[in-house]
Length: 254
Image (cartoon, rainbow, N blue to C red):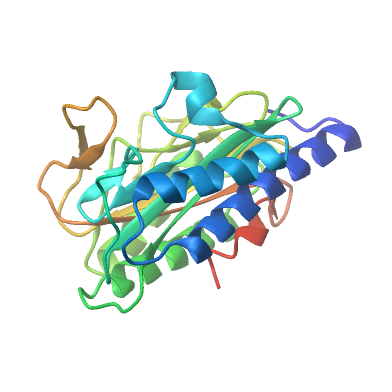
């Protein structure tokens, strides 16, 4: 989506604040012994109270209001009454929604309670790399150059990137052009970021895998070589200078 007037910017801000608030509250609500289904229902109620509708449910018929992935699950985890959260779990929550015709997307990984499995270093890498990537985005910058930055920073820290999961355009629907904002230098992608466009920038930082594979449930994705992955995501407006981070209030960088 390209922002052409103040009304559109305000619409994107309102939708983004809804998903950011929901993500922050879900992260704070999560506790040991809680099922991912209960956590999802909590988030779904917040969205409903704000007048927002779950984007994965609306777009794909996803069996949940939000995506909640735990430990070796990389993304698109289905909320379940059987999946009980434990101390030290690596949890990823991805919240996207539609509100009054505008769509926004954000997500983040975190450790529940004490970091007994030493996931925090991976999480910090994902956060820091996302921040550096976003700070380098402005109109005219090659999308592939941002991918190169993400992969280079991951390698510096001893990690890999997932090559078949990408950021994307967003605004009037969940996925728009540019459809692929990869975490590596895609030399075939000659597109550049355009001023005033809205995009969801995501990091997919992995310990051992380079690709994500879908499990038999048709949704949940795991690494082709196992391991763990941290993801962080903001929806931004590209400008001629520093981007406007629409989902900043999710506090994933705190």
